Every structure is written in structure tokens, then in C-alpha cells.
Image 1 (tube, rainbow, N blue to C red):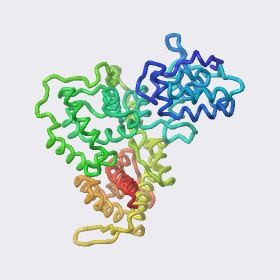
Image 2 (image 1 turned 90 degrees about the vertical axis):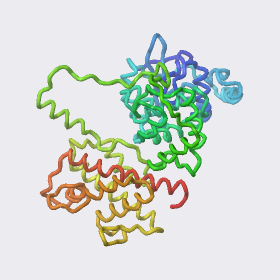
Image 3 (image 1 turned 60 degrees about the vertical axis):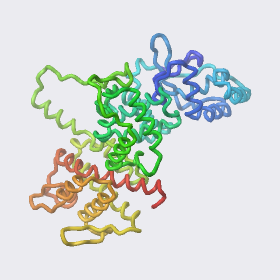
Image 4 (image 1 turned 180 degrees about the horizontal axis):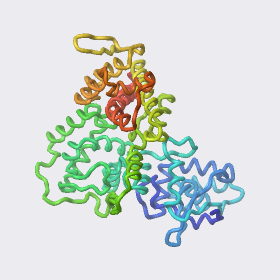
Length: 460
């Protein structure tokens, strides 16, 4: 429903995914000014005399207050252009100068009022997801996690977000570090051994973290971690591999940071933090047909992990698999794109590593791996190289080696990748595709982590 609403009656959202929950409006304004380019936005509005007429602010009413769900940055800028003293003192002069440039003050705007937050979620997701082509300031990983948590309580980075908020609350890090911390912590917590050493009893998708060490001991671990995570000798950032993380745990033990004793009772890291909700099982019997549909629908999207791919075509293939195609509904299209993702990732890796020879060791034979060799040689040659540099674990390489053996019965990951394009009689099911992808997943991730690491070190 469209409405015209006074700027002064709009409330900036305390639950805005752009920041940790903040109740005080003045604190929200301060955060947005210092972290979300509010000055640039206010300057643009002052110069044009209005906000973008193509962009509507979205609101909902909660407890009699008009809460801004979409457009918090714009509303913040408009509030400051009307009343510069809402800004912290060090910023007031800037907004006062802008206010004087505006011929006619903007005191009210047209908004779209949703009946509830839930009604707005589909539109917010469309505007701010990383894969969206729509022009909006995309949410960071941290901000996307908060939004996903508000919808279904199961973001991939939920535990990392809780640690981030705990660290900010206890002044262990500066807010400017938030974007980096959320990705590095997520990577660290992906190893169960790390969670165990840190005293964390809950999983990576659980917001209400439970620990079996004292909170003061947990703080000491985090202090040391934040002190070390930029040091190249530890390699515990977002590009770390499991070996790096396990070595770092040993480093913490030598420093005496890992407690030797554990509490018999558990402690909530942030008391009052809601737990990840668990959907109860339906007590009603499910008809066989509906059950089959349900099991197929669970397959869903093939890819559930984030990759940073600097090549537009390969990135588009990855995003189609991750966000558009349902493997149960389009198994052959998904299989074809999976092959394209694997082969083009291999080719790009080889192009970027021409300065070092990639050798495939097959029994007693060796072969140089180039773009012109067959897919099996590419995959296993690159995988052997990644395993030597600790980007792949030995058991992951063993699984891939077994799955890429030529098999006359048509089974295996390699046969699926080849059969989807070259064998008209090779039927493929969604379950087979998912199984093949699970075998390839560590390999795909390792390729792009290796490339990203080389780019960061300027070795490409």
C-alpha cells in the first residue's frame, strides 16, 4: 500500500541487517554515517533535490511505529538533511552545509507499507542478494547472514555471526573489521577440531553458541586469534585449509590459550540469543506420492557454498547452478553445467599456472597436464597438485581418484560428466548428480581458493 509519510515519523530499523541489533536511533545513525556511505548519499540527494523517484522506501508498522525495512540509508540521509544535529558532533557541520544547499526541504516521502516484515522478505532478498543484478548496495556476508537468520534461522555463518557480535560487545575488535571477521571465523569454525578446541559444543548453523569453558577463557582465545589472523605465517584467514587450522590449534596450545579442563555444565556465549529453530515433524501420515515429491524437492539447488570467481562466464555458470536450476526438475541441464563448471575451472587454473608444471601421476606413468588433455587427466593432475599444497585432503583426493576411474558399467563421477554430453543412452538421475557433485565439491572449492590465494599474493 502506497502512503505519504513524514520523514520525522519514520524509525530506522533496529534489526537492519547492515548492523548488529541497535536500539538507540542516534547509535544507528552514527553507525550508518561511519560505515554505509551516508555522506555521499546525502550529498547526492542535496544536489538533485530529491531521492531517486524509482526507489520506494519500504516500511511496516510495529507497536504503532513506522519501521523502515528497505531504504534505511536513504531515510537516514533525509533525516540528517532535515536535522543535522541528529549526527554526532564531528559530522554535523557537513550535513549543515548540505542542508543550506537545498532549495526546498524534503519533509515527506512516498513509501510502500507492508503488512508485516514477513511480507517484505522476498523483496528484500531480491534486492540485496549477491547474485542479484539489481542496482542496490549489496549486503556483505555478515549482513546477508543476519537477514537469512531472520527468515529461517539457518544461515551458513550463524555461529560466526554470534562470535562477531560477542566480539563487538566486548570490544575485542573494531567495527571496521566486521566484514573480514565474519568470513575468517566462518572458515575457522568449519573444522570440528577447531570448535572442540575453542570449547564450542554447538554447530556452525547455531546462533545460540554453547561453550564448556569459562567465558573469560573464550575471550582470551579470541584475542589471540584476532591478533594472529593477519599474520602470513599462520594462514588462518578466509583462504585457510584444514591443515593450517589444525596447526594453528597446536600454536594456541603452546601459548597456553586452550584450556586443559572443561566445565561439566555448558554456558551460553550470549545469554538470551535465540536458538536456531527446529521444524517439528508432522504427526500426520504422508501419502506415498507426496512423499516422493518431497524427497525430490529436498535435492533443490546443487550448490550451497560461496565461491569468488573473477571470470564472468564461469561465475555465471556457478550462479545458475547455485540460484536458478533445481537438480530434481532439470537434471540434465544441471549435469551439463556441472561439467562446464568443472572443465572451465580446470582450464582457467591451468592458464593461471603455466609458470609451474602440473604433472599427472597415473600408476607408473606421468603426463603433463594442459588444456588439451582429457577431462580425467585434468581433474586428477590438478587434484594431485592441490593435495601437495594442502588445498585438498588425502582422503578427498583418494575419493576423486576412485570416482574418475574408467568404469565399464557407466557408474562414477567421471562417467556422469562424460555421459551427459557424449552418450545418448546414459540416463541420469538427480541423486546421481548430487552424489557426483559431493565428490567434486572439495576439488572445485580448492581450485578457486588456490587461485584467490595467488591473486592476493600477486603471484598470478
